Length: 246
Image (cartoon, rainbow, N blue to C red; front, side):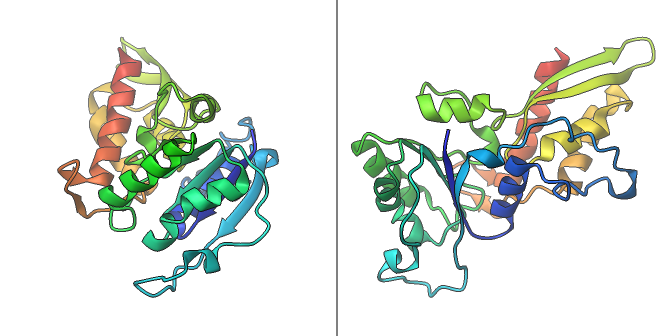
C-alpha cells in the first residue's frame, strides 16, 4: 500500500512517528525505557508522500489549492490530519490528483473538522468512488468493509486490540500485548503501564497512562458525541482492555 499523509500540528506528527516507528518516537518512559517497540515493524517504506501544511493561514482561504504541493505522488490511501477547514475542503481534489482509492480524515478536533464539512467531503469522495472514513477520534477506526481502509486497520492501526493474561492468584496483569495500536501510539504506553499492575485498579491505571502519554484529542465538548473527544478516546481504550480481559 502507498500512503500519502497531509497534516498540520502535533497530532499529525505523532501519527507519522508511530507509522515510521523511529527510535526517538516514544519517550513516555524516559530513562526507564526498555525499547519495547523495537520489534514492531516500520511502515516508512509505504509512505510515498509526507506533507506538513501551514497552520498560519487566515480564517478564510480563497484558493486552497495554492497551499497544496505540486506534482503529488500517486498513492492508494491519503490520511488528512488536522488541516485548516478550507484545505480540508480541497481533499477530494488532492485525492483525484493523487489517484487515491481511499481517504481517512481523523477528527480529533471538531473545530478543524466540523461535522457538516467532513460529511460534505466524504460524500464528494464517495461520489468519485473513493472510500472515505472520518473516525472521531482516530482510535475509533475499525473494520468497515472498505477494502483499502480495512487493509490499513489490519496493518495494526485503529481501534485498540490487545491480548491480555492475568494471574488470578496475585491479581496482576502478567502479559499485555498490542495487536492493534491507536494511530497515535498510545496503546503501547497503556500496555506498558498495565503489565504487573493490579487488575482491580485497571480503570485508574488506564486513565493515568492515557493522560500521561498524552492523548492529543480535543478537550472541547463535541456536540455530535456529547462529550470531549479526549474522553471518548479514553472510553475506547478502557473498553478495549475490558474486552481483552474477558
